[in-house]
Length: 175
Image 1 (cartoon, rainbow, N blue to C red):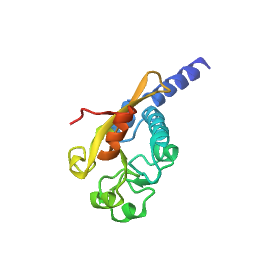
Image 2 (image 1 turned 180 degrees about the vertical axis):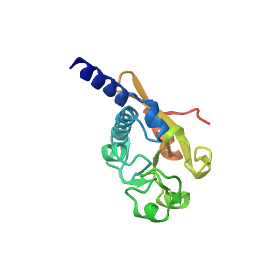
Image 3 (image 1 turned 135 degrees about the horizontal axis):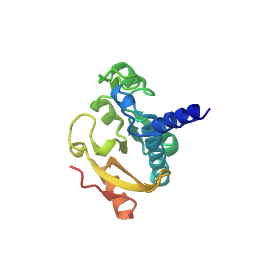
Image 4 (image 1 turned 45 degrees about the horizontal axis):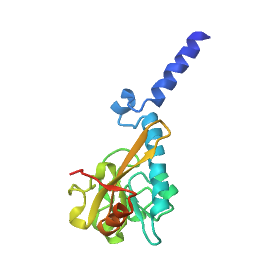
């Protein structure tokens, strides 16, 4: 019985490790990574719900927690919840749920107020979306895993200035 329990404890530890190498090697986000980032995206969504104005919207690749908790209309950058992207998005990979990427033209035609993208990296290669009128901002949240979680996102430049002036975000030094 103790060998079984030891094996189960090791499996649990591996499953909750955000950097579990066997899953990474297979191109699958480790469960621990998903759990950690899901919590962070949920916090980002709550932040947006608290600070967004009527008529604002979001664009996010992780189309679950952030859009749900923000209650903002969302442009799903990967097309799981967006018919236009699912049909006509750019081919971007082989992993289920990550095979398409919304075109820059389509997303900008929707003009989302906020882009929740990793480290403010514009998905189409341009530097932080500045040429399209977005700025990179950051904020921190208490993390359910201890310490603070940091989130960066692109925001419409005019709205970003307002949020910085309100003291709820700071402009990020990312380049």
